[in-house]
Amino acid sequence: MGMYTLRRRLFKRLLWPLIPILLVGAVFAYLFALHAAMTAYDFGLLNDAVDLSRQVAVRQGRLSIDLPLAAQEMLQVNNQDRETYAAWDESGMLFSGNPKLLQLREPIIGNNHRFADLALDGEENRAVILRQWMRGKVYYIAVSQTLRGRNLVSGSTFAGIVFPEALIAFVSIAVILLGVRRGLSPVEALRDEIASRSSDDLRPIEETSAPSELAPIIHGINELFAHLSSAFAGHRRFIADAAHQLRTPLAAMSSQIEVALEETPKDINATLRELLETAQRTTHLSNQLLSLARLEHTETAMLDVASVDLHQVFLETSADFVSLAARKGVEINFDLPPLRIRGSALMLRELLANLLDNAVRYTPAGGKVDVTLQGGNGVILLTMENDGPAVPHEELEKLGTPFHRLPSSDPGGCGLGLAIVREIARIHGAEVAFGHGANGAGLRVQVRFHAAAGGA
Image (cartoon, rainbow, N blue to C red; front, top):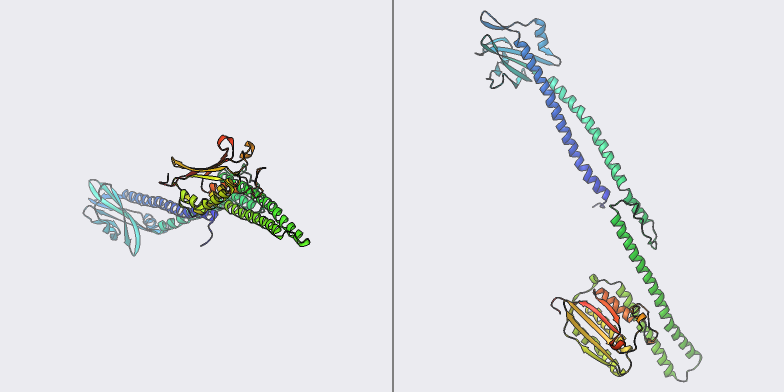
């Protein structure tokens, strides 16, 4: 199957209907012209019959026609055609002319004349039969003519119509071809402009000079360019930040190894613990980077979506963090009714894990973390609140930005946990809000989900 093009479709829609239109127009024009020519010939026959009727006389009580010899010769040969006539009385008795025309002796109803077609001497003829009266006597005159002249008129009429119709068709096709080519030139110009751009040229296309029909397309392309430009800028920032974040622990690890190689450490276990902590931070940072990079390229349509019980997901996710909180002396309180949302259980576990990790990490010993689920009116609100250090107001809006860390952040953190939370919430059509905890202390994170059918 050939490639679909707008040009081909326009030609198909414009040229194919034009052909039958021109053909039908030529046929109708030919029929009208032919009818006019045939009518003129019929009237000529009728005039000949009327002229003959003026030559009828009554002599000795009998009808007769006295035609001069020259008139008879002219009647017999009229241009290309041969004419003949006959005259008979009411009883059907021929009193002048060709007896072969007596086959036309049929009564005339209504008008005083009628036309008929007949074969005479092996040739098609057209005839008129005229009814007249002379001194109370009824008589009929028939004039017959061959069809040579009529056929000649038909041929010349057809030729006279076909030539201008062909010329009109040629001009119409040329106009359509030129019009389609000129009409699609803005589309081709747009195509050439886009094709000539490099992969990093995302400047908006000029919209004011384009036809109004192309304006929505160009506007959509410009919006796409803007989104791509923003996404590429974000990716560049992400790569730069990731390189910076990875460079620090890797440099520290290299320095520790170099020191260990140059000098025999007094306490090999202490050196190995430092290397292990650095490797663990690097591993955690790498995993967070990979998770965030994967989430930024994920959309809802790409998920394996199902109805997920948040209560069950919390039970599966919180075990490790409860142990971590107990070792640190942090109390975690759960209020988790069985509420369901539609989403990816795997990603929701990652969201909850990052929220719990952030809450436990920044809650001091002796503090507490409250985790609650509330549902109603088709909405599920997940709230996680701790009583750690208060977050400055100017820092709340920056939370969830990749690699953004508070001045008082845990040195083991990498500033990606809340960014991952925000990305997973975006994929699930949820909103994340940050605020202060009770009495203005700590941090409260709220994630607003839409409940699954029958969930809340």
